[in-house]
Length: 270
Image (cartoon, rainbow, N blue to C red; front, side, top):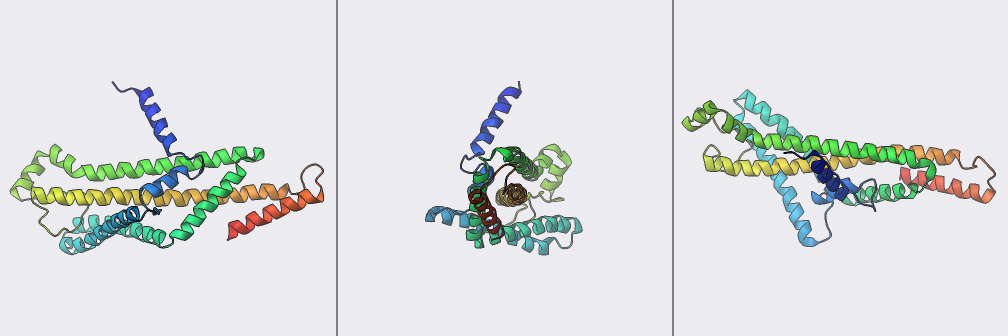
């Protein structure tokens, strides 16, 4: 019997592990960027491993373009290939720029973390901070759920079709139909044999899984950072309005508040 209470507990424990007290806003997003290798580790061997993984997905995207030539006479196969290939191309472009501008992205992430931590001790901003943190978590987890569900469906579609359709199985065995692919791509062997299809499906599944990891980690990180910038502007406006306070504030306090607001504005614009 399905234990709903146990499942909820497991889910809470999983989400808790994604949190990072040192990065209260970007905790899950930072872990995703690290897990999928967008933030390259300092260790040389681990860095080479992740760069190899990125290269393999990039090569996989190139094989999707090659396959367009072989399916160009079948409009259905061509359209199915093109829609996936263009999405993969966008993903490759995103990740290539992220890796090329790694230093700048790290600088932005550290700035967001530092600024967020500096504001979390403020009593009059707790409601705003809690709201945008919850909003960022919802965006992140819903986006992840949608993407990973899509990846599972895409990977499982060929097997489900083969198991559920006797006519499809017979047509494949007789050569009237080809095996349905996870993702339309070219391989240097015959993918219409059982072993060739399995080998192609494994590589295609790898591309789908890692590509999904790319998209989810990059996109949610970018969205959360944009949400933070908007919230930081709101908090800066609150602090600017409070430079002279509601009560008696001496010149020294006012100057310190003014300097703080000015420095935050400079950092935000940098």
